[in-house]
Amino acid sequence: MGEEMKAWERRIHRVSPYTPGEQPKMENIVKLNTNENPYPPAPAVQEAIRSFDVQQLRKYPDPAVAELSSAIADTYQVPKDQVFVGVGSDDVLAMSFLTFFHSEDPVLFPDITYSFYDVWAQEFEIPFETVPLKEDFTIDPLDYIPRERGGRREGPIGGIVIPNPNAPTGIDANVSAIRSIVENNPDVVVIIDEAYVDFGATSVLPMINTFDNLMVVQTFSKSRSLAGSRIGYGFGSKKLIKYLSDVKYSFNSYTMDAITMKVGVASLSDPDYFASCCQKIVATREEAKQRLRALGFHFPDSRTNFIFARHESVPAKELFTALREAGIIVRHFNQPRIDNYLRITIGTDQQMQRLYTFLEEYLQQAGWRAGD
Ligand SMILES: *Cc1c(COP(=O)(O)O)cnc(C)c1O
Image (cartoon, helix red, strand yellow):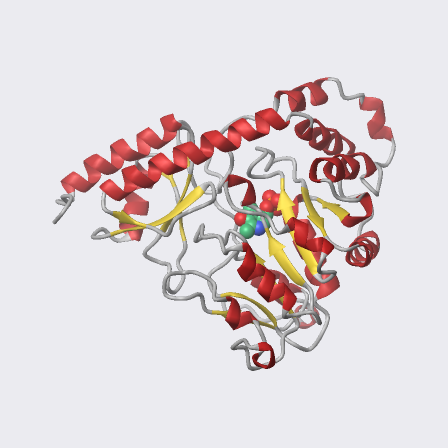
């Protein structure tokens, strides 16, 4: 407080950091705040770690992450030179910002979206503008399309990044909306962040064959239960991936460790397990929609592993605090437009039951009754 700024401090690149969701140390909590998967990674992952040859760690890992890239290429039926692998999709996205957004024109993304985008933009000194979502939190593609191409955007565009489905709203844009954005912005790179696409939305991956300015980013963190391993990947045209790899190699060539590469390959080796985990979460989510609606919550229709909900009479902040005291951790964003919402990650049926039971009792005590 009031401390004088040192001369060297004036030369420092200052940013406001991204605030990650809390990882509380309390025991017996129901943790529904960071969109982690409640189910364990595929059994083959455990086996890969158990049988890992520790001698491998003497050597530097493969900078090209070839084995894992090939496994991703095979899984998604995409040529290897159109795949990029990073340490979490945060790494893929950060490298993409650094590589693709290098002009004086502002990069566009929604006003309500993944809160890392503006952090990276500031970090890399990329000009950006946020585009307000519509009242119902959906994206209007015309806001991202220049006027001369029939859209509503007046000023220049330096690039576009959109999560589909969007976070924290949970809403997915339809494929034709994304297509029109990409198609009408041939002079800039468009990044579609598909962190949650495996929970029922449609990927625009096939469009990389049509549009060489499209980058599609996905992650093992949510749908493959591997947030702790840090594996993200992206798809794009050969040219796009080449530019991205060049920047990555000139930053730090060995970002992914040898164990994580094996973990990723093992995870991909069991598509049935993957599909069944995703199905379970989708089923729990659909039930959660009914249960929460009956308890007086309103929310956009989610196609992710979370629900973004507000209560019709109890303020979000109050519910957040009460839930926390009961050991149920959800996410609240102290931000314009969304500060009366809670983002609730879909857990196991048992975890969700604890949530419903608590809410039933709490709301009853608060004097809320259905239909009032
Ligand atoms: C979780 C998330 C990511 C980052 O995931 P990683 O763990 O870094 O792979 C990226 N974008 C969105 C929208 C997310 O919700």
